[in-house]
Length: 138
Image (cartoon, rainbow, N blue to C red):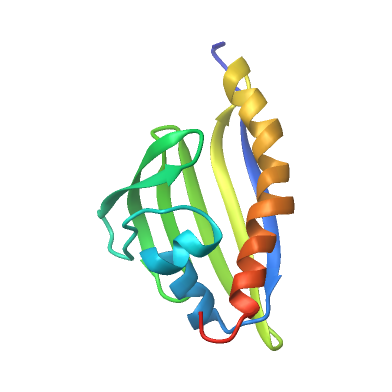
């Protein structure tokens, strides 16, 4: 790593045809989170520690940093990264904004993860959230 590391953030957004309160539940309730992303005992409580079981990557440690229902949910995702979820009402649904920060682009492994994970969030994970959120009573 050099003295002036280049840190990067993945920023993606997705429309979900459900109100913010429903999307909030999809982010913060374990039984709903596993429907669209990963299994883990998530809770919307600052300081709560949990692990997300990522198929192929194992259990990733997380700590909740900020909670502002149903607008903002922030937690660490591994020691290096932070996920910031922001929800805004958008017509008949919710615009979900995700920032996945902490990628040190001077580290080859992190740079490869950055290149791979952006499309994963945009093309796979958040569209899955939108599909589950649009279903009646998730």
